[in-house]
Amino acid sequence: MRIEWDRYRVRLGNVGRKRWVRGLIITTDWSHGGMTVTDQDLLFFWAGHGRIRLRSGWAKVEPGVCVWARPGWTYHAEQDPNDPLGNHFIHFNLVDCRGRVRPARAPLPPEIIHPPDPQFVEAATRRIVELCYGFDLRGYSSPPFSHSVTESASAILTAILKDLDCAMSPRPGRAEQDLLPHHDRIARRAALQIASDLQETPTVADLARVSGYSANHFTRIFKQVMGCGPELYAVRLRVERAKLLLLETARPIAEIADIVGYGNVYFFSRQFKQFAGVSPLHYRLQGVASVPATQVVTR
Image 1 (cartoon, rainbow, N blue to C red):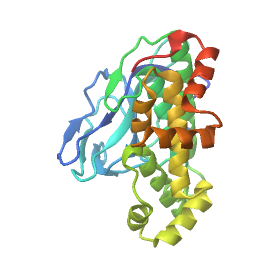
Image 2: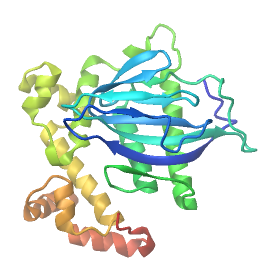
Image 3: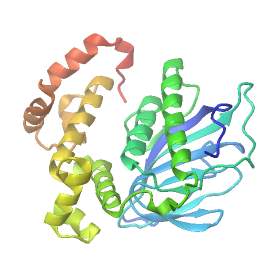
């Protein structure tokens, strides 16, 4: 690996998420937004298509792509107005035991990274954002965070960075772009498309069209890689996201049903009970009874 993980630890900066508006051609500048001259920034794109200007030139971004942004460079990004970008962003520094920042010229993984397991990176970066900022689609939170949040978020971010550093380190006889088989990339990219907006989940036909396969062939590939078909995968995601919102926010159940893609709260409750074993209200009451009330927030 390129980073001396036995010498350096993660120090968190601003954390949040962005989702642009459909129909707008937007150019953004990632050198702003609270970064300092020594900050690095991990960007994970979970929705949309566009491009970003790296030090080596413009690179394509799409669901599942990470950008490991360096200090001292202005990162411009442009989006496809018909498919707007959405991403998690985490500013951080690598510091030693004395709090000294790792030298800017020290080796790092590539700026543009296609993670071998984008679902892991999506879930992990999303969890950091949920811990530090909350569940809204646009915005960020700045340190200092509480001690428990800092400890948890830093540990998760360290695991992500180590995994990316290991995956992108040179391996004899194996090119970086070949780390993930073609069918895996198709299925995992589709899974990210499903997760990116549970209120407007793409149909199997839409996902198959993007992949270039028939609906039946695409479904077989998806099931082989993800363990279930795309429709069941979407339902499981909705239920898991609802569980988090029930335990970690005080939002009404009807609002949570809408957030995770259900137009009918009664159908949501019935499907939630089918997968969770209890009703949403019962699940919330069980969970709140087992954690301090201060952990339930209103965001």
